[in-house]
Length: 212
Image 1: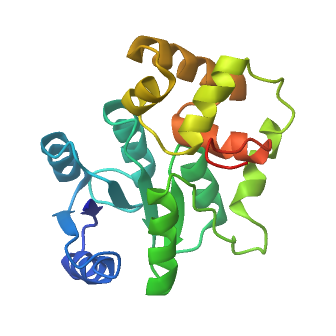
Image 2: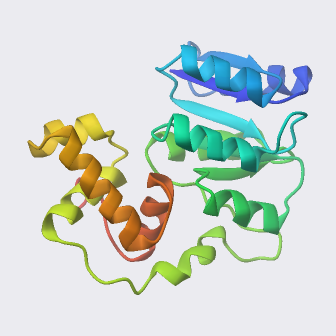
């Protein structure tokens, strides 16, 4: 397992590295103090499983960095970290494609739980500071028309967290056909990336291919 931590405080990065050993003693943790350094590392380590991204960084915000990762590595889940439980920031990063939002003031168990959910292909939607839930932000997707049968099969594979290549092998279709179906799914839910599509689909009652 390989995880990239992007935070401008060395002590925070080291603390996160220690916490991440709770997932796997042999987890490899890459560290970057800026988004620019993180982008370089992500380009040289194509086997990354996850990125832990601080929202407040010296060269750009985590929100801006999300857009870059979305273009360069759309398959890579990003878990946003923030020093404050700001509801507006949480909604912004979730709508921009983050796979979850965790405050730095939270306990280690919460972070590990969030990471496990994200690595399983789910989206971590924490309880917000005002007592609601992040998932309420996606209610607008709940009344979309149904997908075609083939699109629904691809969507169920997305809900399992599978890559385009894995979906291609599972369904016996070409990579280009998978890309076409994924693009149609994004348009159907009026979202910009796969993570947002998974959230919207779950809110509409879609289940993964492994669920009855």
